[in-house]
Image (cartoon, rainbow, N blue to C red; front, side, top):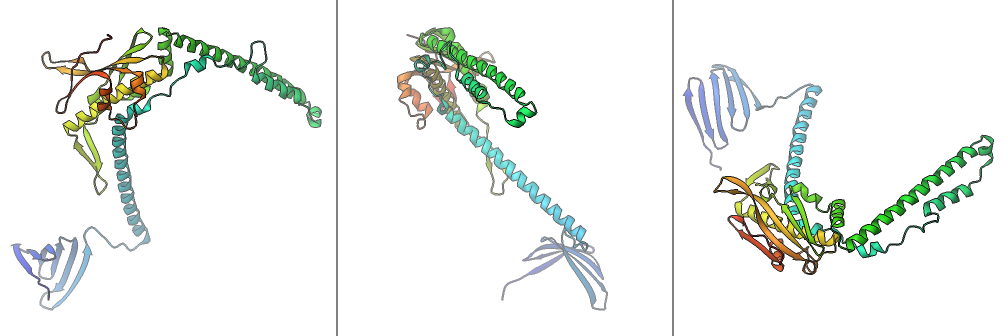
Length: 367
């Protein structure tokens, strides 16, 4: 036989608190009419004739009502479906927020893996023309063949459609000639650019960088770039990293119920991600420049805005300075390296403290 108990306390006239194993409840009223409610949400109304032993009790769950008409029942069901749909939408949005957060962290650490495909300027310089000067181009040849092969049918002659079709075919010949000319001029331009690049022409170097815009995606992180050249064998790059604003201040995750959890990112973790981001950018810049230009090495200076506690003003300071040579860079497995550790393959200045982050360093200068 199970153990049970029930205790009742009077706290005011007509008001009692009832305690049992199943929960806590309260009752109100006078003889013949009482209203009770418990912690499980049940409501009970008891009516009766005092002294007769006759009573009537109705029980209902809190917040619920038994509707009779189908319209009200359907309305109640639709409201329930709406609440469930809103909950699903909230969970889906929270999942999207977490995925966006995790994707950004992954992108920050993978910037160096997105280097451009190398351009073979030597091959481009020796690319044959689309057709020989003074000869018909391939598009014109095709258009003339279509015009010459056209044989009007009986109904086309009858309704005099053949004249219009022949005029259209002649017009297409002119369009084809223009297309051939454009392609020839494009070939000439490409060969000229390739020749100047291989000759080490500085203006052409900068023109190629402007045309290809290899680092445009880094602008999403707020990075800005300046390029300098004194010798065709190398380039010097200054870039602003804005690392503290790139790395999120919070860690986003989902609770078991699908709610969005926001927690402050530990300082050491944020600083560690900042280091990965900056070093990944350094390698990415070097990779893109080696892919586009026939240079042997590149000097890269990463700058960031830092508060000068002496003056109280923010100042631009160099936090990483590296000389990356092409041969060593080409030997790296970019998919497997740790970017921060990988800089040890090159001459560089970087001072990073786990609890304070990057410290100012001197720029490397060409020896």
